[in-house]
Amino acid sequence: MDDREVVQHIDELVAEEHRLRDHSTAGHPLTDADRERLGQLEVQLDQMWDLLRRRKAREEFNENPDVETVRPPDVVENYQQ
Image (cartoon, rainbow, N blue to C red; front, side, top):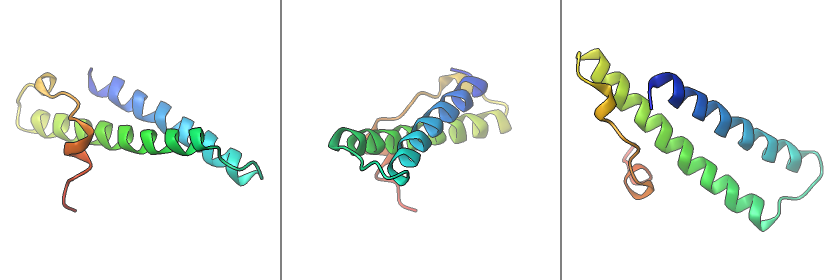
């Protein structure tokens, strides 16, 4: 997955997240499935942003960004900020 594809995937995830949130703010309560999906979207977005940051870092140092892969949720979600 190249940078363009990663950004495109991020855009798709964000659009889906916005659709769900807009639906809920329009007076339609979120279902359990909607809330679960929002949680999944948040994790997937964290994974994609992490991947993009690591790819950009490799590019900056003239290394091959294609060696980077999506990290598992438990790794990405346990970062110290």
